[in-house]
Amino acid sequence: MQICGVDDAGRGSLLGPLVIAGILIEKTKIPKLSALGVKDSKKLTAKTREKLYKKIILIVDSYYVAKISPKSIDNSVKKHGLNKLEAKYMAKVISKLNPDTSFVDSCDVNPKRFGKEISRLSNNNKIRSYHHADSRFIVVSAASIIAKVTRDKVITRLRKDHDLGSGYPSDRKTINFVKKYYKTQKIMPNFVRKSWKPAQKIIDKN
Image (cartoon, rainbow, N blue to C red; front, top):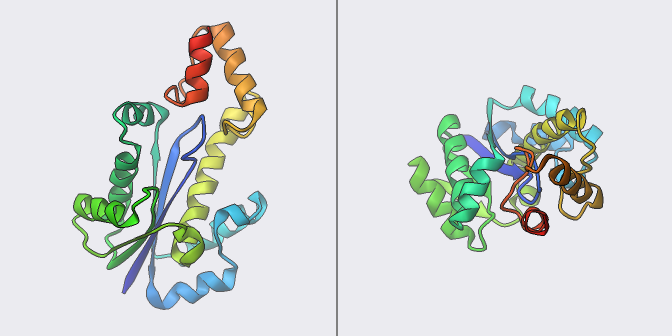
């Protein structure tokens, strides 16, 4: 019995990709993830996540990561289709891994509807969609760690050239970076999500 866990990282960020990760594991091996101390990535330090990432990929049978670019996110936001975009990529991950059952973290207010959309797109009927699945199911927790570490690596690379903070709209450093960049360059960096309200405000003001 092959079980899949799927989660995202960076959905609310003003910049960088939205990362979707999935892990595939034989049901009998799931206790090995518990023994490692795997839990929702938000409850772990960056250092712990990185250590667990290396151990997780050795235990699981397979894993797959998809990155959604800011441009694709902006196009979907224009059509009010961000949830559909995420469902499409989760379906892509599940199709690649081909599990017997999948557990996904729902970004839709209606997890059942979200699960049905993924099921339709992946031709896989065994989709279990829940809110807070990353803290309820260890296979989703493992996927959340893979997604977060992957996204953090992208942000770290961007930081080599830019002083951009965490990348989230609540971070004053991030907002100041985008403001300064737009003011001097007259364009938004290609790694900024232009459809996000803080970016829109900066564009409108200038």
